[in-house]
Image (cartoon, rainbow, N blue to C red):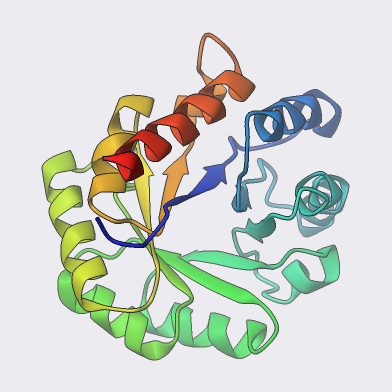
Length: 213
């Protein structure tokens, strides 16, 4: 087994009500260690985005986790709101612009990598991590077997970390076996009948069992 120990990367639903969502976020952290959180904001108004991010950043950073946000028109809003970086949909131009705005102090992660060539280009350009397996813009999930193949290929060959998207808690084990550096959870946490705390704990237990084999 590789020495890589998969870490959890949590993706929030689009947040509009801080008071309603903050307790759910706090509950997720009670389930165990989460290393990164992508805060998704329902509003496109930059003042509202900044307000919500500033309210939730302390909840995440006090737990030792990094906060990423999806970019607004102002790519430097992440810094002003206290976030640790941004998470973008890949194009060469978008990545170049993001790197110029964020580096050297903040993280730039990418998704929407349709081909292996695109993934290699993003890694070579300086992205801090690549995400594989996230839903398409229309909400449809890619073929999970193909995601596993992409993750295994990437982790065996390249040093840039990858984030592998787990549609369900049952998928965590396979992604850990594929040696993903991070495993992303979204609906699997927020829609879990037992609640976010139990879902995060279950994911971490699945990772630990995989590493123990």
